[in-house]
Structure formats: structure tokens, C-alpha cells
Amino acid sequence: LCDSDRLPSLRALDLSYNVPLNGTAVAALADSPSAARLTTLDLHNNRIGDAGLIALSAGFPGLERLRVSGFQSQAGPAIGRDGLAALF
Image 1 (spheres, rainbow, N blue to C red):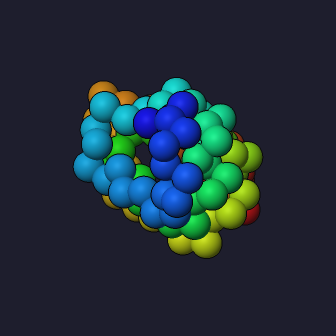
Image 2 (image 1 turned 120 degrees about the vertical axis):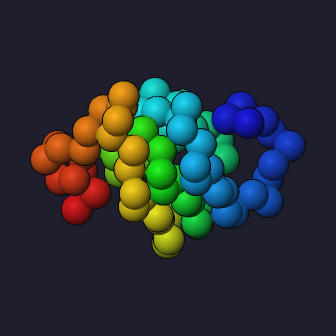
Image 3 (image 1 turned 60 degrees about the vertical axis):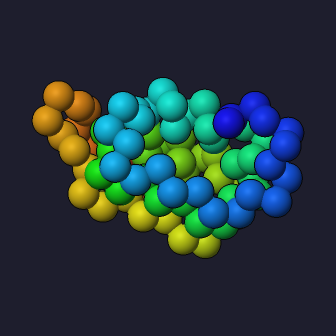
């Protein structure tokens, strides 16, 4: 998905409740050509941690809507000050 050039019109992506999704996966998505075109991204109920939030802040310049509520912290990284600060 991250490296696909077949998604030029992709503007919204819902990856909610995708528990295996982590900060590394969000960073890979942020580095993809599709990231710059996304206007809506739903990542709620995932385990992306601070690394994922930091990747979000840098890699998705066109985001208008972002949903990151309901993070699953059991067996996954917690959201800390660094991650929250990156979003603001």
C-alpha cells in the first residue's frame, strides 16, 4: 500500500482497529507518495505510540481530518509528551 503508485486519487484512509499497526508502520506510510495526498486519516484504536504521532506530524502535510482517539496501550507503546507535542 505504501509504495503503490496505483492509488493516485486516494484521499481518505481508515486503518482503525488495526491493532498490529504500530509507529513503524505509520512512519512507512508517512514516507509513501500517497501520504502527501491524504486529507483524512483514521488511526483510532491502534498501538502507534509516540513514534507514530511524531511520524504523523511530519509526513502528512495535507491532512484536514485526523482521528487518533482510543489508543490501545496494552502490550503497546503508550502515548507520552513527545507524541502529543508533535501534533501541536
